[in-house]
Image 1: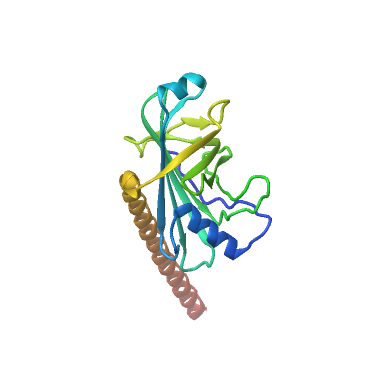
Image 2: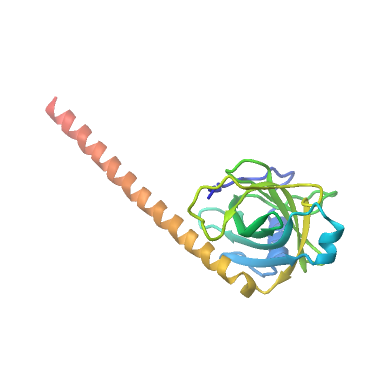
Length: 220
């Protein structure tokens, strides 16, 4: 898989109340003090695909997460997306932590967040739509890999095209994204465990360096 990294989006203003309100709208929740999810899906029917012959995406499922981290007052976003394509067998996925990608008060584009990835390309943007009953996903370019083989390296990409640029996904019960939520929680737990292990190793290394310095000083 192509691993993702934190990517912060530039914003014109850092209005905390506006950012909080946006998160609550997008996730349909009253609080983001703990990690909260929202699920959006779309299966394109034959009639739609017939009108858009260049559209590769036939199914898209989006999971958006947001939380206020203990060490940070700002809302942190993440996403996972699963897609099916006309041109590829099986389901593909991508995910990224969006860091401090805040809501941007752009009069023309409205409120949105932008998430990039380590895989190169411009990532994607997400914004609420249809009275918050849907989400608009504006695709630039993201790395994707088979859901069935998440550990294998992949050079597959999903890039914006004439009919694969903007997708409107309907809000559904989080139960529909249950497997994605479970995987996200596992990835979070793994990342925290690795961070704790690294922190502990750094403490041991620092202690060893201090001891070596003390011994060197004593021998001089």
